[in-house]
Length: 474
Image (cartoon, rainbow, N blue to C red; front, side):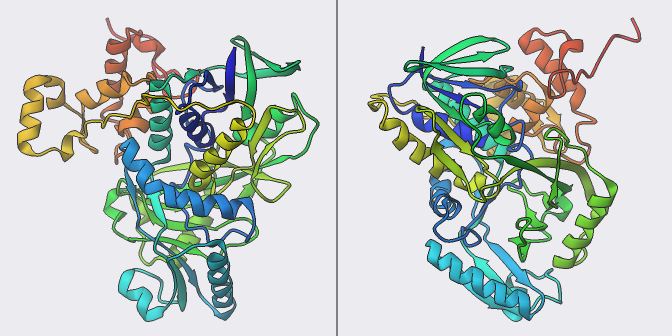
């Protein structure tokens, strides 16, 4: 029997698992997909927000500000790329300028330290491509950018190194409580645990309702994006927002931590929680809105469009609490700024668990090792590494300059990567301009060889997404 069982391996489940792994506990994570970070977290903007947008005294405000302050050190510990690039919320008229003043006041009340209102001339000095129609901006120096899937995978890997059991392709179908024990039924059998933490994202309310009376409803909201080639990555330095509305923070234009340009998302309520389709009409609207913020964005350099599903809820704030069933906890409705807030939410969850179970610190908490980024090595270091392991001398992804050695290492991390997109999220082959057109077949061959899986069994991403069926020539 487990001490703590976590349902869901997105950013919320991963941060909680890693924090709890610092203690002498028997912990499991159940994830319905064949990899982690494969739902809302995967389709995230990667923005570490400052905390000025959240309503004062809300859980969003509390966790966003605290989480923001944790990111830089946490990413150093996990060897994950993070950049404190700052953010701008821009105003085009006096009404929006008044809103910026309200955001400034709200941010100060929330405890955001480095906030400043800028005039047009000051904005132009730091963002040369900003729209000529902008009259003012709210500048937050402490906002940043991160790779959300890499961050989540690093958290899970380090959790596994510290004893956490991760069960993929394990969908929860029922939960009941017998005395002081939860029995969790899944498609992969039965699990027992003293405590359960629900981190099921857009399905958090459905999981909650399996064991407790209904207390909230998730309202799925879709957002679509453009990802532009690195040629456009220098178009802006900061994350640029327009004034937010009741539907969210609006369309942003931002560099990614790896040098691309991201434009989006929009915000559309959806009935189907699994609908990740994109539409020409919505993308055209995003393109128009993004071009309103930043001049001369070359959308011909678009290399990918995608959509993600966010977990809006009918309470209007994050849900981080013990349910009416003792020992069952909800982390639900974690929309933006959920990525920014997750590390701080995890700390509070540890406190809650500590009220039920005596927490004993591990004497030997395993710290993660740094992964080799071949192209960041010096010429001497590259030569020495290739002498030791010739696979680092073979470039597989020409767009991102990723070597075979890096792909092999990613496959054999604590959480084994079995899919083409799983490798893509860890070490980036297929994220460049050709989107895997060149390297995709080679990545399949490497996975097949390393894991001894037939080529026709290799998946692109989720179960059923087969790439090959049979040989056409003998």
